[in-house]
Image 1 (cartoon, rainbow, N blue to C red):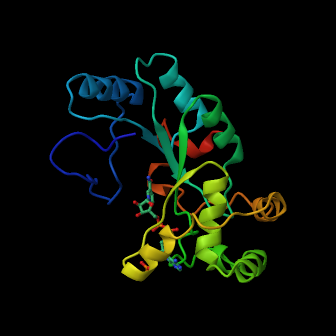
Image 2: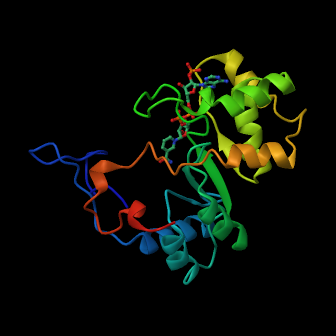
Length: 199
Ligand SMILES: NC(=O)c1ccc[n+]([C@@H]2O[C@H](COP(=O)([O-])OP(=O)(O)OC[C@H]3O[C@@H](n4cnc5c(N)ncnc54)[C@H](OP(=O)(O)O)[C@@H]3O)[C@@H](O)[C@H]2O)c1
């Protein structure tokens, strides 16, 4: 969904409520395909799309989405959406992959504090963040961790020199509890609100 067209990037009404456009995202997709045709962009994708929404696009698309960027971490596996995307050749990309450790809204243990994760990290001589990212990578997702610290950015890249066993992968997958941080509350009443769809 888009914000209302016009001057403000983030338009709000007099009560401070965000104003959305009711443009159909399928029309937006067609416009993005035109951007590819014109050489303005090389690859196009979507974010926070449910399988139902992706299917609406696939039904008419000339160019299919390269990826779908969604919240995904130890506590939100998004397994069904991942399967759907894999079946359709679409990469699922994890945002908030470390479980947004700065966000204290979730009751402990938070993702990077999970005892199972800490144990595996100790055994592998890796940091919990590295094991967490490696886990997502081995599941076949791509990841976009965020840090403002150069040392952590480097740390988050050092995940190609070790492997998790199938048993370790299962232990980590079992930590899923379908916990979502980014529920996009402001958009809850919108006709295209994505998180009402089962996956
Ligand atoms: N498409 C969407 O709707 C959407 C929504 C939200 C976010 N995103 C994207 O996803 C990216 C990541 O999301 P996010 O920032 O919420 O979650 P995140 O990457 O899970 O967490 C970022 C937090 O983790 C800390 N961190 C980073 N590396 C660490 C490490 N090795 N050990 C311990 N802590 C570490 C960072 O602190 P320091 O910075 O202090 O290191 C930062 O507070 C964003 O940059 C954004 O582009 C997309």
